[in-house]
Image (cartoon, rainbow, N blue to C red; front, side, top):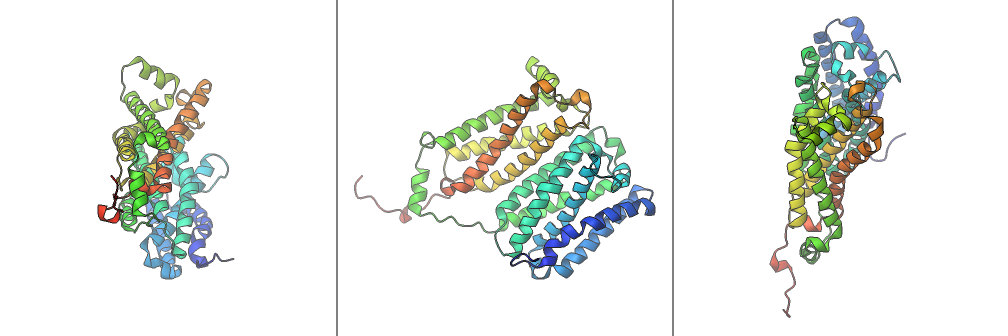
Length: 377
């Protein structure tokens, strides 16, 4: 079976590599007894995959991101195998790698980011591969993926460096180096891709941008939601910074004890929210009040991907049995915890949807010469 307009080898490479991945990790057990050799084995597998890309990619390799997405889909399959094995659904595939290479993947947070990479990122890679094959725009999906990947690797690496597993770092951690370099390069290419121009007349753009906030009830509701999100972001930032207030003490012990987990992932997550995501929420409100903020649609997609990945990992880790019992979310606050965090994740998604669905308010203001003159003032 062949997808319309897409060469079969380029699409099936990630799926066909699932078996070599499993066999390769098992073979490493007999070929190596130290993390350095395991690292070299992983590099060899990646180089082999790159060779396959250039052999089977054909004309699609004219877009370098095609090669990047196929390459990263390989690692997504590995991550899905890791998460399934750590949760007991399969066994005997990556035990050696986890034990000797990256023991921090045994944590609840490590399992959650592997699930996200193996399911959500993998789906995005395949969708963007198909879009490249059909010569369609994948810019919006790419920006969402970019934010998700950057958030995932930032929290993971910083947590490894300062958390309880900081003394167990091995050379295998260098396998995460491409996840630092690739987003920088891929992000530049994604932002340089041309946007799909909306089919809007200058009159329509001017009419939309002339409306005040109170004349746009949906935007007003979104601003209120972002204000609540800002308050919650600031509060949780103060909690992980050991604010002595009674409300902070009660929250971290009775509502989200996972924030105290010594793995440090939740603390790093809340600090990234505080110092990076909170300022963007303020800019998002600014862009919803004043017209012509053409930068908002792109960055809203990036932040939507980042917050979606972060909240999935945070929610899953808080409830996962691999998290020590004292740091798991108490059963009597499950529903309030879930609703609060789901609403937190919803705000950036609604903002991105608003920017993409009705972009007129965020387009550059049309020149006065393009607007019809009014005879009657």
